[in-house]
Length: 283
Image (cartoon, rainbow, N blue to C red; front, top):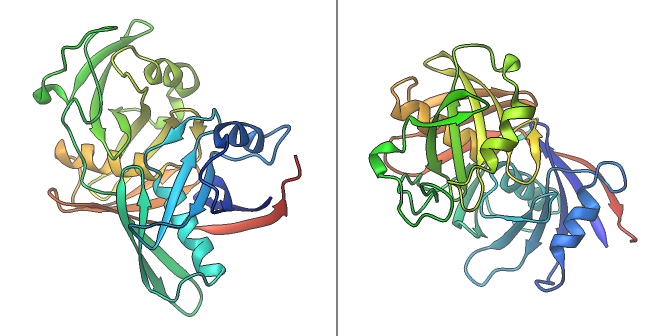
């Protein structure tokens, strides 16, 4: 099976172009994404034909779980389409589990900037989804989506909950994000009982109205160098709280992602995407 390794701001993926929708792709993702016994990646991308759009993307986390949305994965997929000349268009529509996403290519003499739509953010408890207490059917009131308090290891955290097609919990901190104990706190937030599908967790420090520092704990992957849907959730939550303007640069350990949101419609994500290497998976 031929594959291509790509990365966007250090968020790395294995891409397989295939027409095969069946099969145990969850098991394949676990094997290929393993950083010791496999290729190593934050996720497995499948490039598939689509009856609704130009192409279809599926994304599997290293634990085998399928993600509804993946902004950096979408840009890496678009980079592959450009490199392989699979489409002459400067704009594409990609089908994902979270809906159809638009991709725009801005070609310059030296590079190609890729901007992807991330959909309209949602704040309804059922869309995130989030529920009170283990096994409870009672949903958190929508008014509590910003600044919802949880206690982890005796410490209160204010979580701003938003769906970018997948669940996110954004926590604003006054201290530099490098000091935050993400490896300890991240998995505990991910597996909180109030999140029936688990959640992605972002810890954020506001630098000014146009700049943010952040780190991300991704559901099913652990800490990653960047997260596209996470960057979108961060920008939305920051704007909802009045911390930033509608264009913001988010510095993550792997690089800078740019996010635009008009406060009403779709979120747009821009950032780097590169091919790392190609190979053949023989297992």
